[in-house]
Length: 232
Image (tube, rainbow, N blue to C red):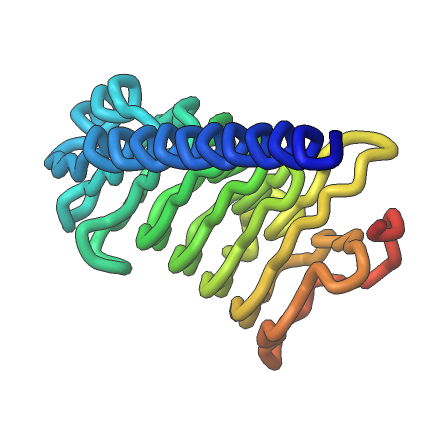
């Protein structure tokens, strides 16, 4: 009986091992297929970029050619894609700009905003785990530069400076996931400096939200660091 019992157990373990290996193989193949389907798409206009975004699948990298583009309206609903400038800082989005990111896990990188005005928000993020990086807001007039409404979003290696005196009062980076909802955002390795405006930019931050950033001399906007929802 003992021998038969062990044989049955060993047979079950062998079957389980084969099933696990088969499952791992399937997941590996799925990953390879997803990787193979991902593409780098180069475009030379904002209209072409929007078309590419609408057709994109997770893993795609959409690259806008270096240059200056004016009056840009862009929506990014596709999850898991990257939208970036051909070279970091090589694309200027000036004039009136409104960018909305509603796809989870989107990367948005390498753009400059240096001339023009928007009465409201330049970049609105309503999704989770979105990464904004290498963005430069310098001398651009807007109420808010970035609005984060999701969770676990990231703002990294960005520069915020010279918000015009006549710009509407508002946060440079506004974190607002909703009442009672912790956002867990991270703002790190960014520079904030030379804000000659009348103030009114009030920050409400969770612990460890603002990390390794430079708050330059001449920052006249009112800066308030308060504890938000506990991170659990």
